[in-house]
Amino acid sequence: MECKKENNLDKCNCTYEPCSRKGICCDCLTYHLKQRQLPACCFPKDAERTYNRSFEHFTELVSKRKI
Image (cartoon, rainbow, N blue to C red; front, side, top):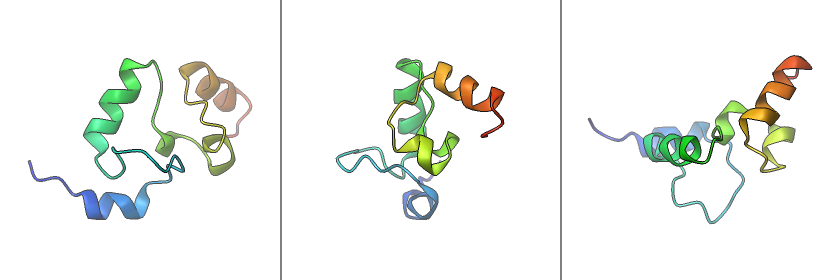
């Protein structure tokens, strides 16, 4: 499968600047799932900036209807 990195970068909301996985969604997802996290694209802008990508933070946001 061909990587669509350039297209993915247009949609990537990750604000972590030294991230080497930006636009490479399969690598990003694999990395975060191993950490029991979700990638930035699963979070609204204000929540993404906290860098708290945990499952627990995600479920809290869902329960508060912020996602």
